[in-house]
Image (cartoon, rainbow, N blue to C red; front, side, top):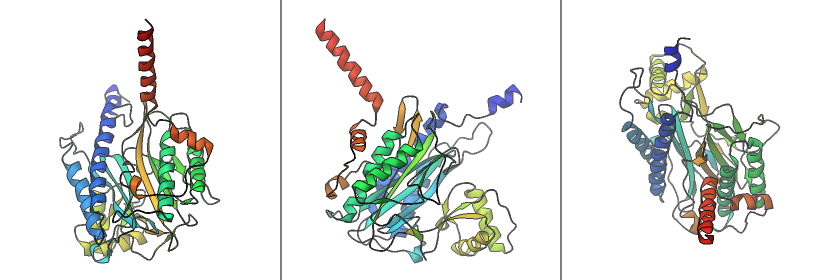
Length: 385
């Protein structure tokens, strides 16, 4: 390889300050969109309309940044990395309906809002749970929200350089038990890389006979999307009859589709969504989307994100955030505070596990703590002199 070629090879991890800036800028956009979508989750609101609104904010805000061409003279890719989904009550995820197949929110619904965007392939993802209508809640809904929230806070403190993915999975289990809930099987928190939303390194929500991952240590300059999903039921989801609308191009498969509409569909997907998930709502012509998707799926050109649910009568809560493992420590760049839920939600349970209590009482910003201690020591020295 010539010197010129090695210079041109991009450093695509956090050791490159430009990469860190792109992650942080994408994170700011997700935070803004998430807050606006949460505000729109009111009784009688139409879910498809709110999902469209979320996607529009992600598109518009990413559209304002990085409009100069890159060093290679190409336009910088940016936009939605995971379309806005709003999954209610026992629905576990991926509900982003087409206009004519939507449903409305009701007071007391527990709604999980999930989304992601990217700048130049660097992805920021987040999810938050809200109770529609703002009523105080003291039942199983409160338990599952607080289980998910405390598990997310524990994960933030454990995803540190030198710790392992197994430690995080164990924390999920301990906290779920204290709130009489279960972590949802099949949920993975993935490492993210440029244009890759589900990297090979993953943290299990819960280990089962069917699903295991290799243990690894978190390393400097890595990025993770931590996805915490808890259930008041058995912690097992199944596919629903609801139409799947979220898909991702299976990049390793190619096939020339037979019908013109299907070819038009896959050509639009290849051009606009070559590597990251998208919703059928984003396809210009809905008829093309409906025809194209079934043929593309038959020939395994797409990976499907089916709408999943727990048993009826159960509730599922989710918190998701993006972390950057920087030299100064782990930095959470997306994910909102508990906010209104703090006053709204009263669970009869609390974290009982001593190890977890100690962990949650520690700061999520260890560097700031050290600085405070140092300042206090300096002050003490000055007083003594």
